[in-house]
Length: 527
Image (cartoon, rainbow, N blue to C red; front, side, top):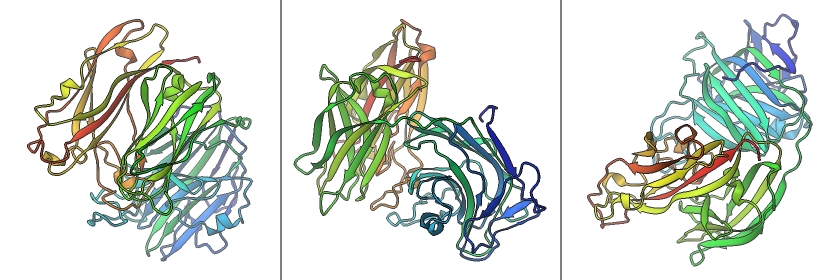
């Protein structure tokens, strides 16, 4: 959890119901028609009736600051969920956006940042319908929302639900720290991190008000809050606007044209930019859009013509997509005139594809200054006639003397299904090992939160676990800091391997394969 930092603002609300104690802040009902009440040292957001939707709005306006933190205790059960929202103070509390808002468990609110505590996602057996919990996972999810869009959703491994309204309370801590280009979000449940400084792009610091609420469609739901504490850091000026660079604008990707590109003028020097965010959009080709999940890549070429994969994505089952991706690792490539491409094979309607960049002025904790390709391409697995060792040949990693840190960045997605043994490679988990020098870094290639994909529901089998990806999402790289095992100015061998696997049906269908990309990123503390 975050260490102690000097606070600029401190207030609390103990909901004692005896008037305002010293240091306590005022609060008001979110809407006039509320059944929330204060009693026994707690705010009771739900009374147990059906179709309840209650919230409170805290009085103070929080000036634009470096960070904010809230600590409170929550007891919730039998409800749809609860939410904590940070609102643009310039928007009146009586605005239509606020008064129409009701889904506290999924707090998509205009000009606001919300954290949802969702306790209702019942198990599902239908592989194709809108309900996602196909593997009977615990119904305790925490989601992050900004300006009417869910950005992330994770299952809390720590229990925060109560069986009844007499059980103990669960301590919750939420911390937002504004950095160049956006905000780092942390959420802890009973001291265990669900989000630990997770970066979300484009959320700028602003004057804030805070709200808190809960929702229950059925009877007997309860949500109680007590010991609410708030602290904030020093006030800060408004950040400078980003430099916006267009690249590809609504170019059609079709059955006969799987790749679109542009020669893009990027900043000649980018040292002053602490964060670089790519905006990638796949929209409909009027009047249709591809109904299937497809493998896609965004490439950039250096001045010598070498190709680097900037972004890996998988299209959704028939829905438009709009992503923001931090591409700051590729800073040394994102300067001058560069060739950029979006590639995504389709056998149907296709999409219109757009790409642009925001270069945010400001500091960074470290600056990528060199990128080296290690392996890239498509590798079939499980075929004795095509050993994977032919693809993953040993490499040598040389660390420059001026590199303060070194990270190996690996992006892998598994593809292919029946009749391959174990339904490989899309629906088969498999261990993999990166070896740098003599140090081994094991990892399981398997994504188990596909059903929480913010772009839900979709068509098809959108909810099932997969080998490293989810339909309608950006593929997260596996990043390993290897600075401790390769000294400055030294070289070490680098190897990659997978657990033994044999496809008993090799040659009988679409072969199981991994789309694989690995790069070494070298960083300096100063630009």
